[in-house]
Image (cartoon, rainbow, N blue to C red; front, side):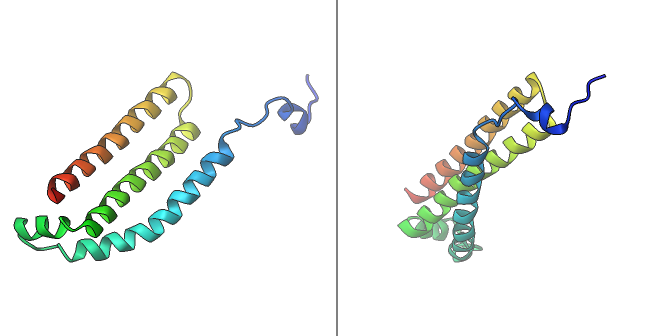
Length: 123
């Protein structure tokens, strides 16, 4: 029978060394989204309900296109970091690495599709 305290069991395990950086990256993207999402809603609201020609003319202007692109990029990056934390907390072993890889490919692939759509509308 081992009479170890909780502290003695934890000594030597150490930290993963990336938790603080990941936390601050999530905080920075949260603040960026706090600014970008209302801007996106207000800029996108001007194009909502218009014809295809009106929407393409609207997104041909640089401000709405840049706001939409930044919202997509930061949003999917934030999504990817959040899902990674979720997977790390609840899935272990080889499946953890596979799911993180799949979700990273899925989130950045969706961001690429969104940026392509905005570029297609804007140009």
